[in-house]
Image (cartoon, rainbow, N blue to C red; front, side, top):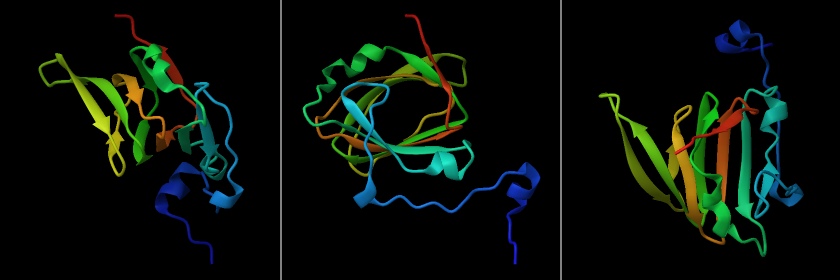
Length: 149
């Protein structure tokens, strides 16, 4: 019996079965040299529609330059972070109905979750040396654009 959701039928896309066990984890270099990244196999399973990875501060890594990224936006449809260990502090420019924006700082710790709307202006300010977080994005590949002050 071939059972597919209506969404998959209309989109013509399949999601394949995928597992990713901690004992087989592979940690790789990525965007920032003080972090290491563990791909959870979701990109391949979804044909690039979704990415899920864990990032953490590498042993001996110095995340003190985290804020150096500067204000930026991601050109994507969905982004969520869930903190597994440690903490991270962000600043956001939150759009208001009036058309103005307000700046808010948020510090997230274990068990905290944040959905960042598409193209929200933000920056990572600092994080703990033991930070580990799960990030989910859609699509898997997207562009990041710096915002000039």
